[in-house]
Image (cartoon, rainbow, N blue to C red; front, side, top):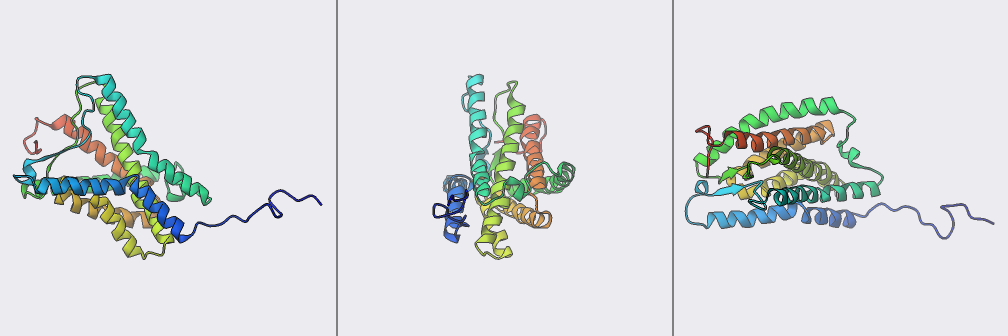
Length: 266
């Protein structure tokens, strides 16, 4: 008798990943991405607090030049860094596909573009205004380093790279720290409150290189983002909001530095 495809002794039913596999998978994703960034930020913070002088007299630089005075090589390094930083997101997509889902499972798709854009813009407007005030206060009180959002040369690709960098940050952080991590923690049996605390703590940890202000401010942002994700079931609005916030920080700093007296400079 001829066996039908997918049946008989040579086939096995599809198995769901065990809790141990899900736990190890989550640790690997974080170890290759923002978990490792959290450890690096902690080491950087320890170096800052043990260095003579106050935190506000030190600077934390983002989007720095990789090859000064060699613009085409610098551009190649910038694009390489942006692209490779998104590899963990591709890994998450692979793991979701294995269990019959996709990034759409996390609400990262184009099915609701206008609601995502509208909600994201509203979030960015609220968090952006309060975030600037909190950062300025943290620097003035000595709880934060002076953050330099960009230090790229004045070449033609500067602003496109800053925008791409902002979008990359948003996709990486919101897909992994909110959508993926909460899904896995739910599957591992964590309570909603504990999962929220874990996600917010992780977000704060990899901003610790900026100082206590960066850590606390981003933890609060993490709590808000987890609450909104639980309510809407989509990371799309959070990616939009985070992109707008970082674009405002990166491009705004480039346009305003040296032209306004309220912006802290190193």
